Image 1 (cartoon, rainbow, N blue to C red):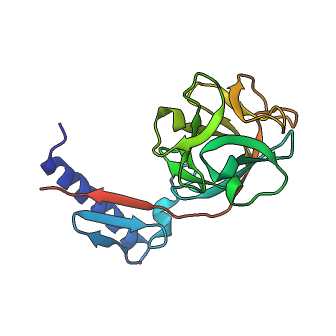
Image 2: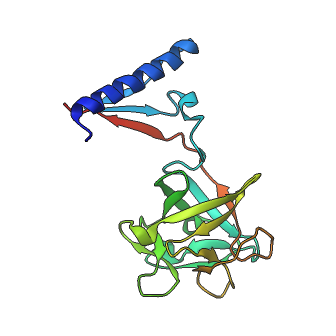
Length: 206
């Protein structure tokens, strides 16, 4: 069982490791002490984030997705509270999604009205942007092509991939195929609008 004593010593070991990195590179470690939290952010020590998988997709990163097949952008209709469509020729606020990172591959997508994108809970495969808080249905996996990290496929909680079948239809998660060719309706180009360095937060209790 994880105890306060164990947490304290894990923190001590972590800080010893960070201190050794700082000493090796002849530089100081910068951090912010917020009560029982120690926050280390990327702008304070960029090298601490070098080993993070998909470090360009940290919390708060803004992205846009363009269908390779249709050459249209994903958009949260009305900025949220409705379906997600695939009919925009140019991106703006409704076509921009803010990432909430769960782990290195899974994310929540937040739209401009602060709601979350998710699989419809009405028994269909439609993608909607109607939830005030994320859950299982609002979890997505971003699969990146080797050698082309901005060429992606997006897997929904039902195990199927998002696909852009037509610019007159809403976005659905019902594609079970594979491949990365231009005619594949599940392949998107991901544009990263903002690169954030993120943060590491450690909590100590006694």
